[in-house]
Image 1 (cartoon, rainbow, N blue to C red):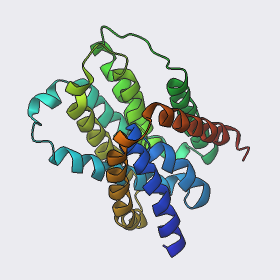
Image 2 (cartoon, rainbow, N blue to C red):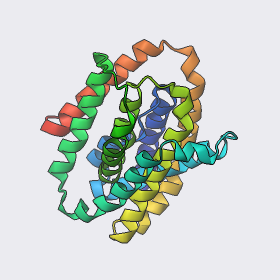
Image 3 (cartoon, rainbow, N blue to C red):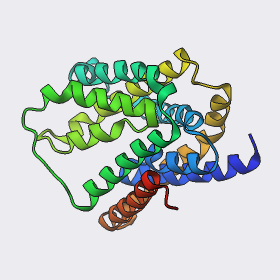
Length: 245
């Protein structure tokens, strides 16, 4: 652990958490490609990102006074499938080389960017049958690249449900798949002790960034910002796939 990694890695996570505070996502999508490009291998970065997200989601959940067991039962299949597949994906981590990792991450970045740029929307009226496949995909992606929340967020944004009523459930889903991913890392020996140290060092950067992002949300043109974020994601995604930069 060097001062350069702590400072520059902390700045990357600070920026990423500001984006999350404003746009509602970003901790993994922004930080993962940058951290793996300059400082860590995918195997080293995964547990750090997942641990940071776990703490952030736990921090938000304990502040939610309205959380009850109903929040879990409403999305039980989604949450349980996400947890199970987050753990099970650990069987395959040893077979995922850096190139495959970059293609998966890059594809997710490009898909997320295009979804924001062109406003690709579809209607899912009967959404419950999709809980298990969507939850499973999120669990797999969370263990592989620490970004399992993206498919779930995109899924719920295209249902007739009131998004506010699912806020706690989504947080609980994130919490569950992060626990699942960390459990997988521990079972299969993919959680190095250094990851715990980096997580502790980077946590203040992430908390400060999230607070800044949430406070800045009402002071900027959110539509323009979302498009700028999408363009940045698109560039990072293409580069991750083609390795052109």
